[in-house]
Length: 182
Image 1 (cartoon, rainbow, N blue to C red):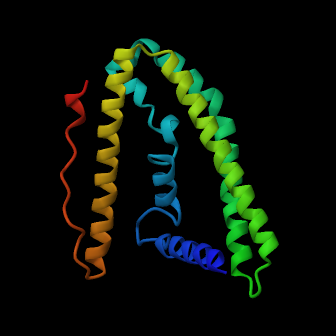
Image 2: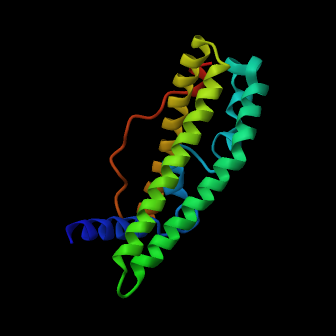
């Protein structure tokens, strides 16, 4: 019973957190961005390697690796989204069937594992075309990009809090400039 209560509270918390903010991203988009580590479209959407002087020489190889993985990643993400909605529907029933819910949770876990494996293989393939020096510089650049992204999301949340009469969250150290890395 405690396990069910924890699962139910988790999904209630996620549902509340996903409420669409006025003028903000659609419901679930911010959660997806956090889970996938960046804005919608992921690496393909940003094409960061084209902007970086660090990897210009291998940009075409990186793009090919990403393009070859994009369809599979998209299918897995869509499957995960569908499975999460099905779980939500199962939990929303007046009398949830614990067998069906457990089966759906297992399917979601398997799909998430598949997504993680596919992402890891893709990142390994990208890393294989980079020199150790390029890899270290990209790691530093990636960290700064994530800090910048988190800062933008924090600003958006603070603005929403202000619109609702709530104080903004405690300020955090601003990210360094991206230009310092390249």
